[in-house]
Amino acid sequence: MDIDTIRTKINQLDDELLRIFNERASLALAIGEIKKQQQLPIYDPQREKLIFQRMQQDNRGPLDNAAIIRLFERVIDESRSLERTHAKGLR
Image 1: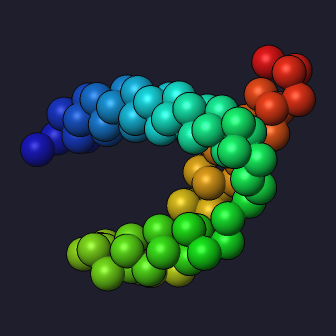
Image 2: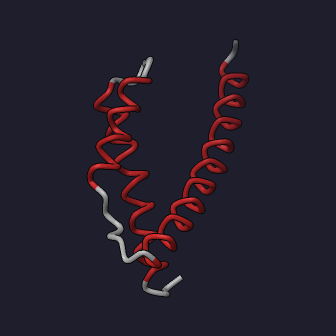
């Protein structure tokens, strides 16, 4: 493959990641609504721990587990922030 072909593939993957990130955010908002109705806290450290464990178990590289955890920490942090903003009625 040449560089342009590889970059085209990367662009396609970036488009898919964007779609997936937004779909995940929509689902996080739905969970946030349920948590609000049930008066549950937004932050659930046990759930996050399980996500990190599962991602490490499923990781086949080339990214190492530390990189995977950093990526998922960021995604989860943004989801939590979105839930908080939505819960306060600022969205």
